[in-house]
Length: 200
Image (cartoon, rainbow, N blue to C red; front, side, top):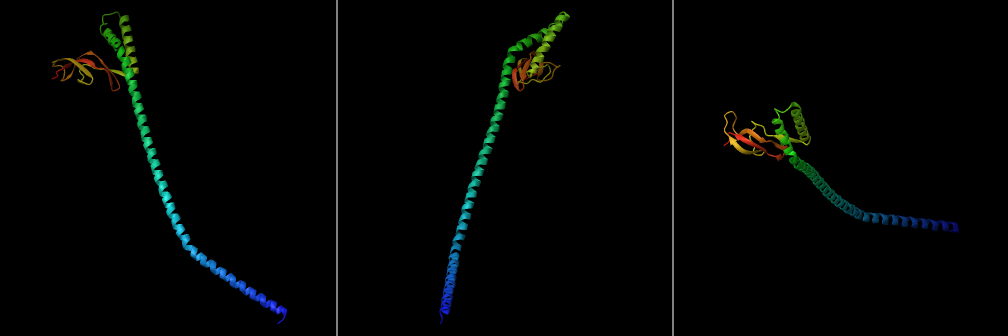
């Protein structure tokens, strides 16, 4: 055998060894891959479980924050309503207190108008003008008078100081008003002083 043939033979044997080695490495890699696949699946299932747990936790936190927000909104709404009512009540109380101090002036003007029938026209007109100004001022303050003859008696509005029997009037109605009552909204400033007809 010549040297060239010998070299070719050796080269061929080296190639076969390399191919066998390559095939062996390939088989080892496939085996390793086959062995690794279950682990990947296991890791994937574990990751999914962890993901679901984190999502559930976030959902619970979101629900808690939502409940806190709704509670806070309700508390603020109640606070706003309460402060609005308190402001209205304070205004009504302040108005009632101020008006109660000038009701004697309104009573005097009303009496003056009633007793000025025989007075000179200029004097009578002056008294009526001042009385009208007083009524206008009370109206602007949302103050209204009540207590007229013939109205039904209401103990929440009227203070009965006497009673009388009368065929001309109905049962349990106002026969006479000694002093008008005043109120602002639902708040009574002064009860009307009245005489009640045909009451038990």
